[in-house]
Amino acid sequence: MNLFNQPLRAYIRMTAAVVIFGVTPQLAAAQAPHPSIRDVARKEATRMVAADSKAAIVPHPPNYPQTFGPPIPNTKAGRRAVLVTLGSLGGLIGGGMLAATISCSANPGEDCGLAALAGAPVGAVAAGLTVAILTR
Image 1 (cartoon, rainbow, N blue to C red):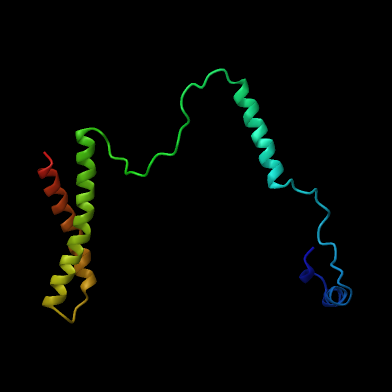
Image 2: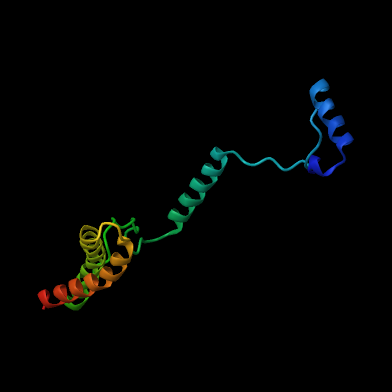
């Protein structure tokens, strides 16, 4: 029950009752108490022990979380594709920065962002092709 949806007088009466008598209005129906964390853990441990005692053999060791590592393929073509992609990404950033630097130093009053937008794809293609040729 939202008190702000009621008329102002009812809200003032409820506030006065809380302040004077320390009584809070019933805002929701009584809910069943939640089990404590200890009870939940005890039930889960009992369930796990029962499941382990019923298992005759363990088919394989448990799957532990893998350590963090980039998913690099094992094949030569897969590694080459990853390297070309990373080289193109580096060329995209480097080409944009180089074009913006050259444009700003040659024409100090102009906008350098437009030159960065033009130089970024050129740098990406150049770096991608360079890495592709070097990884043959």
